[in-house]
Image (cartoon, rainbow over all chains, first blue to last red; front, top):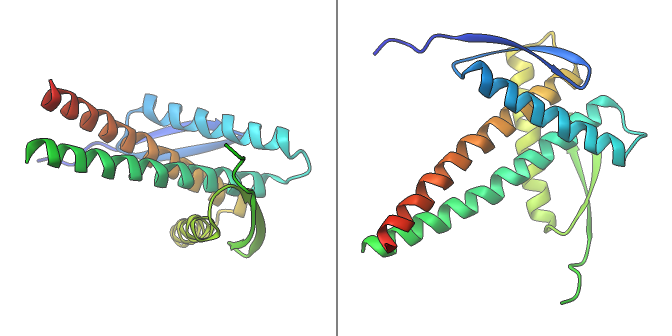
Length: 86
Length: 86
């Protein structure tokens, strides 16, 4: 199978432009960027004294936390499927 | 039901200290922080010219991307459960 073609998408996040290179569609990349931008603005609103790096790090912390919680949901669902199949 | 007690956990991420306030256990907070720290160091290794803010933003972008992919897995599993139950 041929390699997926790489896309380069320029997105604006918290006032800076980032070029994201990858195999995802440009729509997906823009959606991800808009979610990150939104989260950074929310955190900045609640903590107006924080600099951009700290806001970005806390956004990453929140996103990784959400990921781990969703991983628990996946495990529970996988167990349920296993039981239902068994 | 009583409110969950709030925890305050100081963690080190990419050379800075952050105090994370929330209802999660300190172990969970430290685990999340270590994952963010690790991801930032990986991105910085591959892109040594990037400043901390950009590294943190790209870490957030990657984490949100992973979250959305995992959400697709959850949807597929939920559909499978529904079919198996139906």
